[in-house]
Length: 168
Image (cartoon, rainbow, N blue to C red):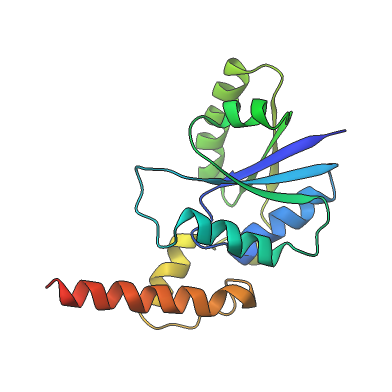
């Protein structure tokens, strides 16, 4: 059985992420979407909110499991008995960084390989950061995120803007 991890911050999950999840889930027996709890970043959503959003948008994909993790990805792979790491590539600039990470992970755990999936052309420009910026300026994000996520992003952005205004 091939068990894989698709790691990321998913803050918020985008249609590009969902595209990679769907395609990877057809390639492996079990896909674990690993939601990174990175203390160095200041996410819009809590780790639990990101996990819940991903569970909602993947509920119809039977071989997908959503889990949060912190620490090294290779340790998470060991804990979940995964032998493949899935990474999406939007542009050539992603490849340099992702190749270095794949080689580092392979050095740390030779049992784990990295599988790169080229992002579908329609999502090649898309990132969670872009979604948050568009939402912050009251732009329409419906073409960027799953329908179930739109209101959550808009609400969180409104809360963040209100908190900013209170503190200035």
